[in-house]
Image (tube, rainbow, N blue to C red; front, side, top):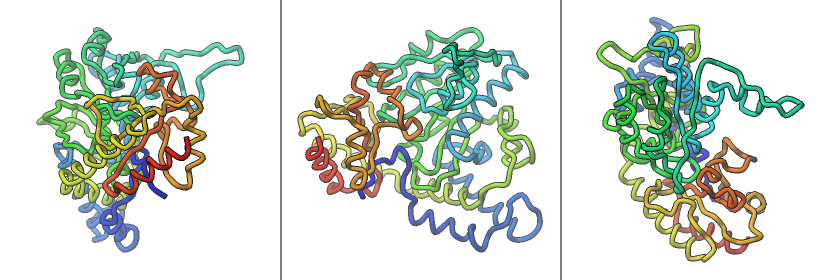
Length: 397
């Protein structure tokens, strides 16, 4: 099978797997234990990995909190910051995000806004009366451009006196649009508003420096840069006094500087650190490989005559291709089922499987939702893979 669904997850690098194995076999100590060698070895491995993850995003190691993944990081940051600011600082309780964010951001904001209580229940009654509750917070959802970009002017129009945070994805996970995070964050700082960025799709693929980009909080996962699943990181800004206060994600022990209680998954953390190290080492090489493949794939796909890009602008992450098959009898889900034993690809986000894409709809393409395919390339993809993709589309539509 040819794997072209790397926005969902990437394969684990062999170097990463090799680095992890000792911490699943010989070095199984708990890094929170004291004195004995296995505990100290585990603790040192965790801190080394923390440093490697920090270096990849231009942060300090003490600003990195390990989590179970980017979804957990995002929920922790948004809920934790808003809770602390509302109840311990100045009472501000409003967050602004966009309509094309990852579900981790959207549903966290909807929860705070009193719209939902779970991820799959719209809180409706038998009489179709949607219940809304007052949790003490507000959320606003910004429109985007036709290419899926979040514009600073749109965000500014939604800012209120009680706005505390803005959360915007760096690279959209469905259509690859790159948002101008630096411009957005600077506009927020002018109004004493903190800025959170979901950098999951860009981290380790293009250069990122959270300090230069004026990012206060960020979320990422290891499994999008050839690392293991089940491990991610939250970047929390710090000053001379340490990390700015934020309500803990999990209350209990003092692991992760008191922000996330629970025994650390050392093997996964080591894998994340190794993946970050490799990404930093090979960043320029992999960027070129994927950019060249992206150019080749776009050319071949457009030559079919009935393929159109959802974001045809240059403001798109190379390797993440969202396209519309402009044929009357084409339906993406039916097509994906038919080729499922040959090619792994998708119609959109894995976190929205089975639902029409809200990202595509927010871009004004709601009538095309059933005709969208997403192809995402990794560093192992070849031109032969692209040729097979194109021929498969051609022979199945």
